[in-house]
Length: 300
Length: 103
Image (cartoon, rainbow over all chains, first blue to last red; front, top):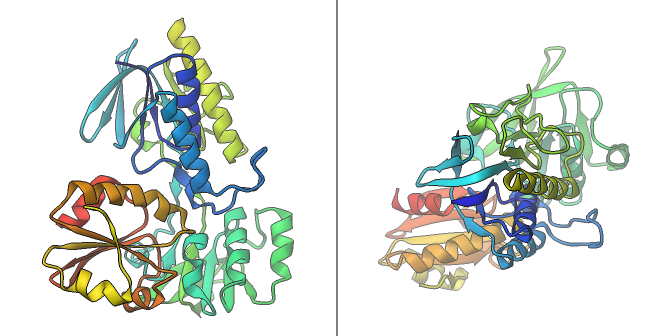
């Protein structure tokens, strides 16, 4: 039996592992894919204290090593359920059942999709969720970005230096992203705003040829594009635990700053927790708080 | 077996003429998810001697990535008897890598 099982090996989960091990608890981290989570998509982190520049993958690899050197165990299996047995909790994966005194849910979030019929089949054939990964394939071509938050604005800026033309499609008439980003966008001559509009169809033969965009006034426009970058937000990965833990309307766990879920011995940390600021630094902060609360709970 | 780096020059011999099924990992050094996938692919290669696993650096080999229509990385492509039989884009788990090759 473990003291603490942490579901999710992103920055929040791995930081919780460090704090758990430093309190001499037996710690297991269950990760569905590979360590790091969302941060590995970031080529250059510039807002983390002390490190002026670090890539997301380097950050993740160093954090993973730090947690492992302290004795945290990592198993690469996806947790699909938790059974609350009171003083112990069972975490179920496709292959095994692991038991611990307490659990931290640090599952983060996944890309939100547009929900169009052929969207999945066109990923890698013109549809992408990662501008920094795939932008270089669209040198001097025409691309569209859909979304209105910071990720969409940053993607459009990034792509405007590579592609010949960038459409920025947003369902409202103004952007939610930071003012500084919005101001930079209007200075770029090759970015065209397509506002009050939704992407309503993806037209493809073998690969994406064009996107159909429908304006609020009902008018329909077809934009010929080689690539579509989707940045319409994230969805928290909490649904597997909804049976046990309360979720808010958007699917986040409404745990407060102390990371308590309302179920004794089960805590939430990182981007899947309801909060205002979702940054690397707040994720690792959650990891520290959740692990500290868990240690208090275990030690009684 | 170790993962073999292939180029446009060696692709035909290593991949298309291979007796074994081949898993090709199209990737780049600047792509975070590609770097995260690398250890998963290396472990798969070690534990599956019946499959040849090769890596293509798309920055060096733009001709190969264009020929095989790779527009998103990481991109795993499975070849059997010189023909593409399966492909998957994005970071995937070790189990999904095995499923992709066996499918």
